[in-house]
Length: 80
Image (cartoon, rainbow, N blue to C red):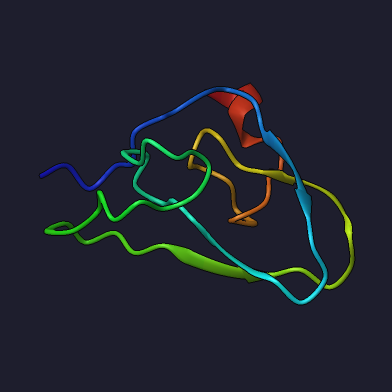
């Protein structure tokens, strides 16, 4: 198994989040429910990243899986 995540897309996923709700961002890139985890990481060294929304608003979740601020986009996709 590779230790590098799969790049799902070279752009963030815009998601309307709900205050107080927890989301589990896919770190491996294998989930069919991007940008969120569906358990596809099982058997690897990857684990989903928990994100709890502080307010109702649009957030941009990393799609390239290389963000330094995961689970949110930091623009790393522009360097891939």
